[in-house]
Image (cartoon, rainbow, N blue to C red; front, top):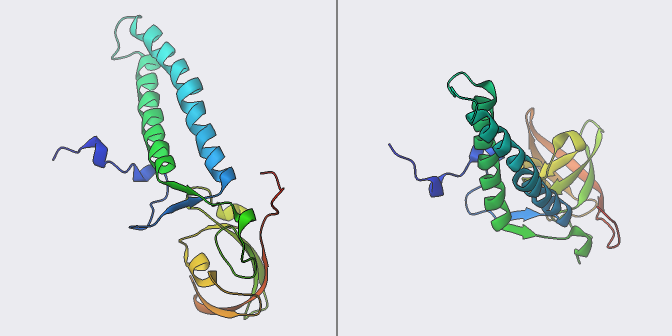
Length: 182
């Protein structure tokens, strides 16, 4: 079966978006993706093209490591660039600092909650392309974020965890300040 490149979602380059979901991201997350795309297309790709051109002029391409690696790297760069362009094209940039209702958990909030075992945690709810669980950032579409969304301080919500359902109480909701720099 022949694949149409326009239909290629390049899902292996990043987490997939749920069907019909908007691609929310913060201004800082958007800027990081734009910077990555610029780095790939204006810095890395031209260097690799130069190496491949030089290597192609050296004769037999079948055993030319510079040529083979360079062609592979070009495919990787092009695939990642297509992915970034698609994600940036459908991005909906939302500035959490401009959130008018700071009393509810919405996109961009940092939420502190405590579970039934009295373990306190904080997570920041970000877009799927910018969330990093190692930095206590969760995707807007994650089970944690879905459970916390729309809640207020003092609310108890049911969260689905790997250990099963768990009740958590919202202790604090914070948003970045309007003049904060990313």
